[in-house]
Amino acid sequence: MLKGISPIISPDLLKVLCEMGHGDRIMIGDGNFPCASVGKNAVIIRCDGHGVPELLDAILSLIPLDEHTDKPVMLMEVSKGDNAKTPIWDTFAEIVAKHDARGKSAIGFYERQEYYNETRKCYALVATGETAVYANVMLQKGVVK
Image 1 (cartoon, rainbow, N blue to C red):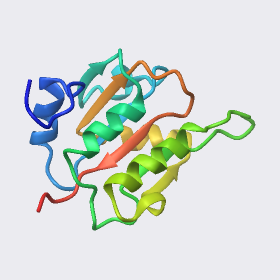
Image 2: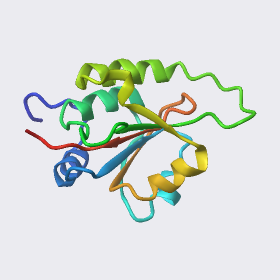
Image 3: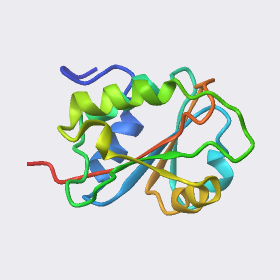
Image 4: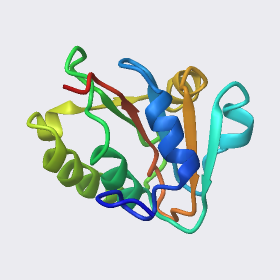
């Protein structure tokens, strides 16, 4: 264990966050996200016993969001015809606002297929046990000052 680092940040996840440079992206996927197949070229970290909000908060306590892009936090849009409710997005916005002055305005959306395509470009994917739907969040790392 280390002082000041959330105990849900595993040694493997901490290593990945250290390896990432500015502009690299990490995606935290809900329990339904196909991390293994979509992330064939990425580092995959298993965090099955945790939800996305607590991991998002822990990760953002260690890395800054990219200041050189308007939307360093990307979510997957609800698919057309899907009536899913996404109250977890409000939780994400609160967490982002806690760590970045841009708050909710730092969050953008990709259409479902575009989200998968962009996820394939991520440095790392974190697979969680999150049960909320559309609870995937992609972060673009900024410069540590």
